[in-house]
Image (cartoon, rainbow, N blue to C red; front, side, top):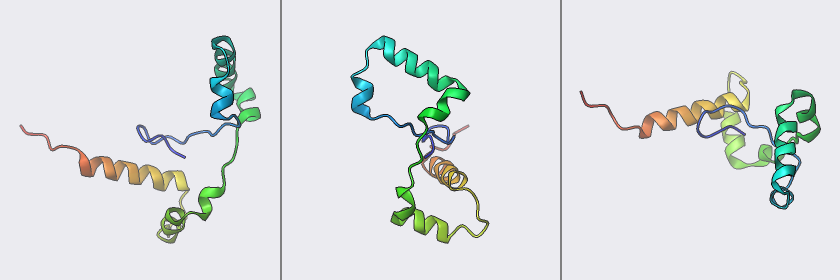
Length: 91
């Protein structure tokens, strides 16, 4: 749902991995260009709702008193985790 590196929301696409890997380079480039176009990306977007039934989602929502978007909560968790495991700077 979010990028583990930058914490920005991800867009899930309606294409399987197998369909993608079977594309040749020209088809992949055309698909990539279509995804860069805001008008065309809507045709490829998918909404994955099954995460709402998972244990981690229910626990996260139970702690969500401010009713924040799930991506905001996940980004905060990623940032908190990154801070926890970062090495301290020695001056």
